[in-house]
Amino acid sequence: MKPDIRELTRPELEAELARLGEKPSHAAAVYLAVHRRKGEDLSSLPGVPARVLAALSPAFSVSPLPPPEKLRVSRDGTRKMLLRFSDGAPAECVVLPAKDRLVACLSSQSGCACGCTFCATGALGLRRSLTAPEIIAQFEACLKQADGGLSSLVFMGMGEPFLNWDNVERAIRILSDSRGRHFPQAKMTLSTVGIIPVIEKLAASDLKVRLAVSVVAAEQEQRARLVPMERTYPLRKVIEAVKSYCAAKDAHVMFEYILFPGVNDRPSDAALLAGLIGGIPCRVNLIPYNPPGAPGGETPRVKEFQRELIAAGLRTYLRPEKGGDIAAACGQLAAERS
Image (cartoon, rainbow, N blue to C red; front, side, top):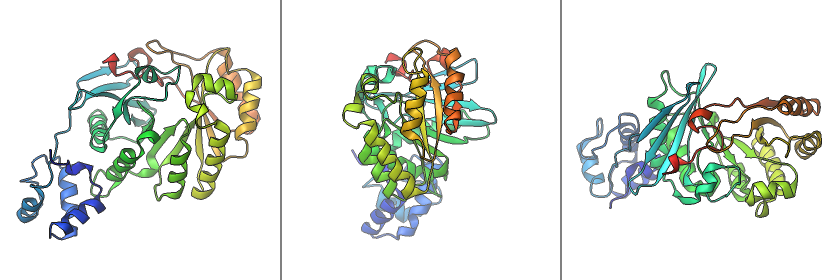
């Protein structure tokens, strides 16, 4: 099977055109035709010279983007879509309404290998990582559900983005390309449980995306029970990598903290978290636990925990639950158990 031309970043396409004896500058027109004008026939892309198409056609294909297999709409306006790719691998993406904004939540993998005990995706295990065109297909599906366009993208769906970094980075570069979707990198956020080598790669890169780190719990053994990756990448070392990232990028980081009633929401837990991340340019997003398959919600301790963190000098926000009635909230994506 010929490689999909959607896999290529524009510099890679320029290099391929040069190898085929064509001007690299034609890459801009090919990119525009494939990514913006939805060209799916490499023999007749709009705006691309026939000679260039004749050179590309023997070497590449343009695979059609799969449409959503299922669409579910929440009472609060959240829209969840199930996409199934050519080998049957499923993934879900979500469009989240937030005041006057629409946020697309994309998956990076079909399933997940991290095994977080509270996460429906983790219970599936990992089927496989998604390709860049499969990630882009989710973006296009979300865009069709967003009247007026999307305000931001978050890689917080199924999978750990930093365990599929090559494809995620490729998708970011393609989506942000001025001849692609021209979606600003500064409006993209990647969430990780703390894959240190990729945090370091991101710090050294030219990407302008935002980093979010899922703390889940600040006490080491408690976090290890909830997030098995703690044993591979201990949170204390993750925090050191985050400090280096913030210094290298002159950037803030988002810390995500899931509140489990009676488990990690005590005043001592707030003090431990504040001591761990104090002094780092950051904001904290508090997420009330969403049981897989059932709506979550705030407990009386949630706002108290927020006040305790604010008193410790941390910018802290509550993430409102969205899509709980359609299993689209944080930690609930399970590809319809397909």
